[in-house]
Each structure stands twice: as C-alpha cells, then as structure tokens.
Length: 207
Image (cartoon, rainbow, N blue to C red; front, side, top):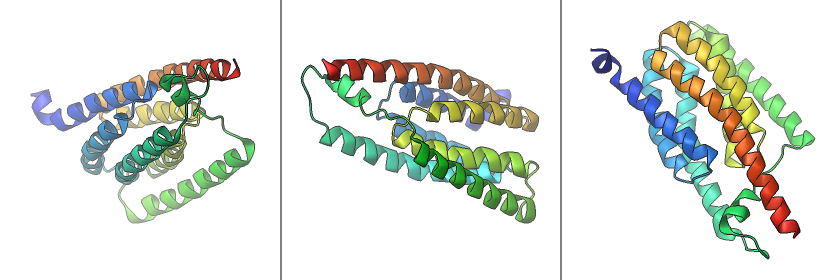
C-alpha cells in the first residue's frame, strides 16, 4: 500500500542514489540519470508545495544538458601528456575554488536566496519559504560548481543535504529524507575520492 501511494517518490529516490554514485566516480552518464531524477522531483516537490525545490529541479533538467556538454567538450579537447592515462587526465581537470570566484558565488547565492525568499513568502503558499529558498539558492551554485569540477562543491552539498533532510522529514517525504541522508554521506565520500584522484593526477603529471 505504501509503495502504491509513494511509488513516484521511491523511484525518484532510487534514481537519485544511482546519480550520486555515478557523480562520485565522475561518470558522464550521471547527467542522464540526473535528468531523469529531476523530472520525477519536479512533480514530487510541486505536490509537496516545495515550489523553489520544484523550480530547482527544472533548473537541474537544464543543468544536466549543460553538464553533459561541458564534460564532453573537456573530454574531447584533453591531450595525453607523458605517463598520463585517460583516468588521470580526467582527474587532472578537478579544480580548487579560488578566492575571487568564491566571493562571486557567495554574492550570487545571497541574491538568489533573497529573490526566492521574497517570491515564496509573498506569492505562494509554501510552508517553509526561507528554508526552501536557501536550499534552492545554494543548490543552484553547487550544481554550477559540479559542472566545472570544482572540488569544494562537495562541502557545499553536505550542508545542503543536511538542511534538506530536515525539511523533508518535517514535510513527511521520508524516502526523499533517506535519500538526502545518503547524499550527505556521499558528499564526504565524494570529496575524499576526488581529492585522492586529484593528488594522484598531479603526481603523475609531475613525473
């Protein structure tokens, strides 16, 4: 009975788990799985009145296409140097967040939050306009960072996932809450995996 009533959310959560596993290992197919997951969550969040979350997943649909194109272009333009393998070449594309860009992203996050909070609190019946706005604003920025393989996106995702988990438990979206618990753990695992691969790629290029 529970599956019949929540099968869309359960399927969306399952595809979300597959997405994050592919993300940790930087598999380009993750963008296709992410597109499918986002399509499910547009409906789920609309039904739960998480309107910013719904809008965020519409953005994810577009970001999945953008991410696929960016990763494909980087793969096609990369050249092999010395003992570099395809895997190490791909890992060498992982970047660290520099201070000037960090400032721009903080400003972008603040402006997005203010705009979304204003819209949700004045023009919708969202039960948590500020929480929904904060999660969505930060997720917009973190997704852009992911597309450009900036490793610090994992720390931002950890905070987003913990906050989201609390919101979804409060709203009764329990399969989605479990998904975001897994996302939080994956954020830690993803950071260490990317960091390890980044260091190995740098050592190989230096030889």
